[in-house]
Length: 279
Length: 295
Image 1 (cartoon, chains in turn green, purple):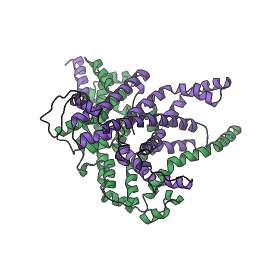
Image 2: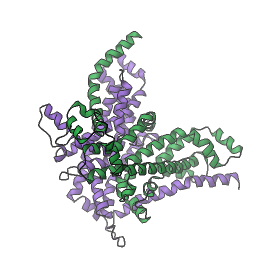
Image 3: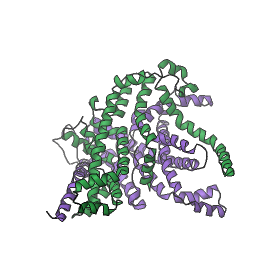
Image 4: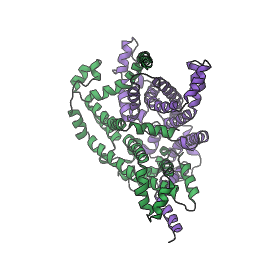
């Protein structure tokens, strides 16, 4: 036991030189971003090219207040959270309903429908933006929240993922509820939904990240700043005028923080998503 | 109503919203995009759509700025995908060793992969500018300053460096998960046969990660073909077209110039390559293993 511990320490010492280089490459840009977001231009300039550039030597919250109020980023954050929420609810319902139907109910053409959905997994969403833009335009939905919900409502991979999870729920639970006279909708909400919470958490995180990162699609369908999503709002704000570095960094920090916070609290889901999906 | 009929009715009701949505936003646009690529549809003149055969594709492959964008995209894919995959594997092997602070080190590096592209692209743009930190460190080490994004020969490689930096951090985690699944007994057997580190890597580790390689290589190739945000923010396709990509060109042609026919033809280039890759992946890896990790 003691030898084992000694070996770990020796091993650590041999690893640290390379590790430090790796951590510097990955963490310095991020430390620089967040530290500078709290600095005034004079302090930023004074700290530049010293170790202080990577440390929070000043705590000027005004930078954030400015970009949130004057830069319109507050509005964009709310828009993004709202659109993400709508997507989580509707995308979750539509796809898990479909998966529930495929997993538990029997009807003609079911195999064909399932085969079709599986075949659609390989179609990349990005390839469809041309016609989807025209469809949204013809429906009169440019510059609406609906334009950022409808195209991604059904997701063949989510249907597949939910179905896999539902199939692992023992059929007996389902059948005994049927015998007790429960309807399909109440079986879904009272039995399947609570058991399947982990997979709903997984898809919700993935939907939130997708919305928070969305760039090309909102760039196409939103021209009215009232409906801007966060990444577009940040990019347009940065391009609109010459700004103090502190303001630039505060804008970028707002763009970067929520996924990082989510990651900090739900890291095991991020890892599980990758692991589950990769094998 | 009999319970069989009721089951059928509910079966269709539950799947109907998904089918309608898939029909309108996936199947219909797939067919429509193919159709439009054969027409001269111009968005401001929706009344006069004429069938023009393959002339959009002929134009596509004769126009220098478009072939240049396709070429740049291929260059980006061919360099960035292998480099980020190899780097991710090295990170994973390195961080799979036992040492104190291992899990915090993994978390710090992995967390970089969840930062949105807009933030990363803007930070890198500042880092590589003429008065940025990279040139400052080059000067400290005695190298002359580099133009990076302002140079036709360095701009694309700078964007590749940024993408590789971030993507390798995310893929590392997939490799780390894969390393856990390789049975320890295989390494012990190899050690008994006197295998060294390199031999264990080639004969045990890499074969054990084969499925993960397939998954990562193909999903990141499809992702890389669609590169847009990075060059859009850092260079807008410049200097002199050096970082123009398929999606930047598509944005110009379809969104700005409203040329639907040509836009459809261009996006089909992406569509068809991505589709072929996805089919290859399905052949290789099977149903469960083929989905994109988002973010």
